[in-house]
Image (cartoon, rainbow, N blue to C red; front, side, top):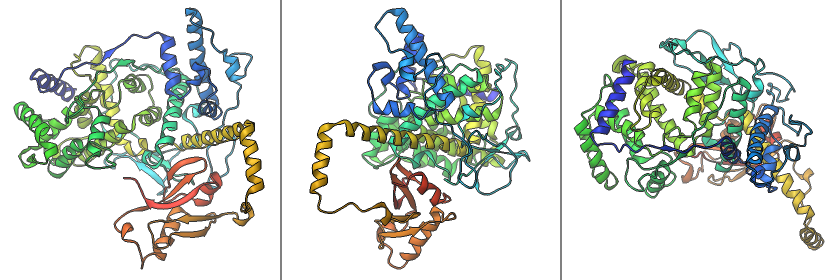
Length: 587
């Protein structure tokens, strides 16, 4: 624990030196009813509070699994009971929403089952956890000291539904010691389904918003199934600076940076600090652990604020340990923690209340899905750098546990907060969380396929609701009848498009479209290869040097960049109304 507390003392010294503003986030007390109301709003179910018949809320409710529905109903019951006690106003009875005569949810829920290799779902089938040896999967584990047994994770079924044995987990003993060896962590792989794997950047912002709704519902249901309370902070956020580099909210910093570099997802100053360390600091002994000069870091901080955007800052003058100090300072000075104020208690709980690494990983996975886009992208860049630091352990003497111990207080201790006896255990707890984040980052930034399946069903339900609403609109029906009589050409019958044939568009290629006959073995990469072959001679200047990907657009998904190993016939059958476009993948 020495590294952890040395880092805490270093943070205090830099704060007392005045190089960091010791602004604390202030917490507002809230009663249970208010917290539940906020929860319902955060999962996209504000319709249950307002009483309005909003299509999005109804569509979301119709796609919930049994455990997810129970979690929603539990929070709504608490909310309504609190309001009745306060005699504020008449609220909707839970039976009016869930269509039940008792406290158990009986509205239609969606069973989520694993999909076998033939693409047919088997109701009631449970996820498989077994030893494997295959290349068609996402391998997540450091080779050095890794255990011989590898566990396969199936993300075809919701985590809360997969908990078959209910047993309340015991809180870690205050004397609990985490095993520091890398081999103490199991090696997990995620088997690719026939739909392939989907990174968080592969979905449209609209669909990722639904992923966040569903992730919070699923996380709550998951904790409920384990008998663990999901705690959230309710913070009154301190407004950060609106310009500059340090102490600026990520969203504002990115807005400013995007004026210089459109589409950028990670702040420029953060990228530059990472690049500096990757180029010259990965082999520096004690990098991250050995602090730089406090006075030099303070001067560099001030100079960066004045010269960075003018491109006049001299990076050659920055020593590696000073660059590491600036990197950690950037993270600490964020007005809101990188992993958000609201869910920091949930990060702590997943280690203190859940003993199995597999279950910790599932909870952590859902928490990553909950992060705002700017936080998630910045955290990913940071963790990728930390993984490179660990990979150079032979020269920099920084193993996974050392790095985790140093980084933890910068991520999980509020500015100006003083350590107490309870934080002795929290030190090991937060270090273990960072260790999981570094070790399993490739898994954690992959969207669980069961959530994507629920997003598809939510979009379909919303479209069906819209169609029904249109049919009840007499004016629209009358207009449609007139237009039907006046139309000059009939619509193309569905039989004109043979089953299993898709038309793929490639607007940046010389050959812009092609009809593709799919079979059970056609993968997305096969279609990309065919276009590349057809356009190899007359390829457009716009496509040279760019990595092209096949995108599924429309139908029951907003936009989905497909895994090259996705079996196209399965994707087509899941979304027959989609358009298929080849274009560069968003970086």
